[in-house]
Image 1 (cartoon, one colour):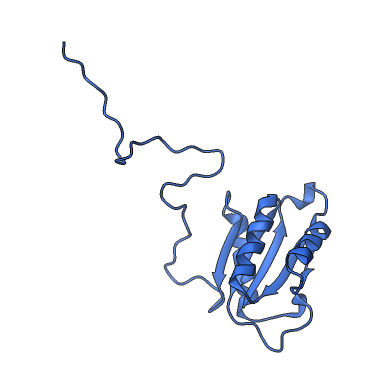
Image 2 (cartoon, helix red, strand yellow):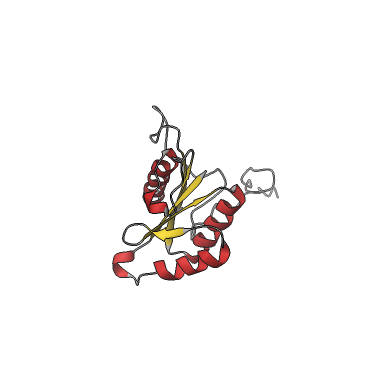
Length: 155
């Protein structure tokens, strides 16, 4: 199962965007239930990985949200309201959204719900090689991957 915890960015200085996002998610995923969990935060449970990806991408395009995806078991029976749910996936979603808030320029994190805490010796995720945060540019390189060498003219 997948639990998404979605938290509004900069909510103390912005309007309440939760009702609008709830309406969008109801149109995007008619069978899923997302609800306001606390303050400016939403939570929902999904079963399909494709729905998780579509939902996360849709929410991130808006630019106003942190997204935490928890992967793991949920306690059965699944309640009608995500706010009443529990289990490792819910714990992992909370951990993931907190990581997303701390990540800086990438407002998304995914956590496995096996233990709910990072493994001993685990290091924080780093940007993939060859990527840069929005607004930053990487140095240009030749196709070979080496920097161009200055030409010397003999004459």
